[in-house]
Image 1 (cartoon, one colour):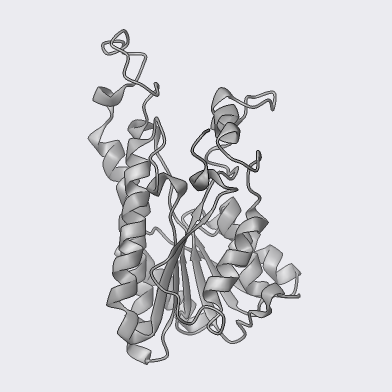
Image 2 (tube, rainbow, N blue to C red):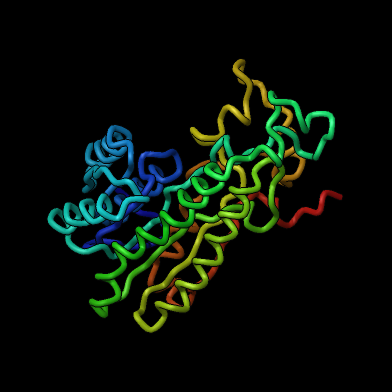
Length: 284
């Protein structure tokens, strides 16, 4: 297994939440290539096992661990397994996150014709439970997971690295997904807060802000059943100067750079866009 970018993570324990998903699976595999012992955490243990098995088949070291990032007891249980198998966490990737249909509007703009249409969910129909779920999944999960896994980093004096996953939504909210956009903005803010709080513990905290990548969660929003792009996809690509979606492997260089204690030793509190130019494009 060869690690690019000369990032040597040998001897380090990496914990990746949401590790069974498309992007975090790629993160897990890359960390293993660089020598890390990788704990793939996911609420879906079967998905985590597939990732861990692939890593081991390719010569890396990994375990799959069930974890509900909204349940401290579940996280504590996962930590005890990681500690026993690999030792304390040195690298934490807070990858668990997502959206929920209950916090999504059907229309991009307010339309009084559908305000009382029970078949169309508009802003006034959004469920408080949906909003809470989205904030919990993206913000509370990162908060709780950091509390559980960063304590050893802080107490050891050796420091460590925490990477959160923000989004382009944090810079400019996207239509239809108000709760998800606001939650990712909170993730960026939390990243900066943690960076300051842990600076004297030698823990660097940064975030990746992906643009548009195809994942299991958004695939049906981006492509029709016959594989052709949806109208939303066409709008996304018009607003992306590189005119395509990102590939999971295109996040890896930024990830390894931020984890490299030689190359990025003075970088903390940064939210790094990886978006094909989306955040730079005004539309004209």
